[in-house]
Image (cartoon, rainbow, N blue to C red; front, side):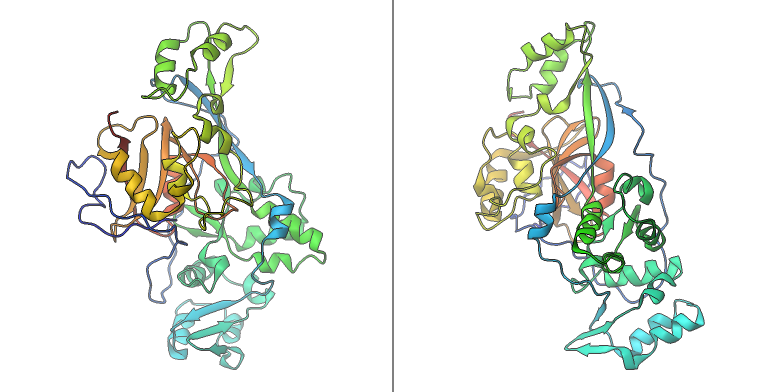
Length: 414
């Protein structure tokens, strides 16, 4: 996720009409939670709608939209090409004394056998400023939910714990729905189900090495990794009938500067009795249409930067993507030249920057489409595809790491 340099007023809430200067864009960084003291506690859970339901948009100039959740998976070839950190379960505590760690574990009110195992300092490994614990399968599975959430949220603040730092988000909050049709062993699914925990509104999973050790072949490990890579996206369709106000629809989806003339296509569908809707991909600009539901290719990092959220947002309206927008300095100049801060209701093709309310840094951007549906790429990783999501769900994701507020930037002259 990209980070902007802090600037006065940059974290202002949407709707505040204060002059604001866009700070320089920097290379998209891995989410880094603010340092925290070792402390117990669990964030409250928030119910998540059933992802299998077909939802309908509010009334608006975009027309009538229907949408439901689909799941994208990384390809087997992509997974084979990526280095995997470790099949060992590790808990790495950085800059913590033995006394601090003992106090932390004692505060969790663990069952006595588990607490005794965790406090066995003779099994702790000290390297530089890192204290490493190698929890056994029994220790991991024996963690009470509250203790698991407290330990894993603490581990998340250090990049030395990659699986806790960026855990897998269980789309929809239901493990079995998320992994349906993945054909994984029941033992693996039930273990994932047992070891999930809450981070804000998200149900997450961080014990990937544990479940990979439960199978014996590389083929089975790839199957698990493929299932865990599942990323939700909305599949959105636009309803068209002979009674549809095509002029209004065309004005909205054609874009303020007419990305393309979609009138003939919409008219042909609306007047065809065999059709009642089209996938929204058909009315998006060329670059977004090519990228949606795909993963970055092997050549995507040729400029030294993999496409991230800002590259994605700023290239939305470009017929051919500008490679230079992967460079933070070039992206900053492009925004300053072409965009201005906007207030009021969001409009099609607005770029929404997520500002960290604590630091004022911009941590993400996405493109507003309609009915709070946005076009987004959540991170620079090649494992993150281009997807459609509800704005509130993107905010929930980034709330695991930051306190985001939304600032709207609109193409100048619109």
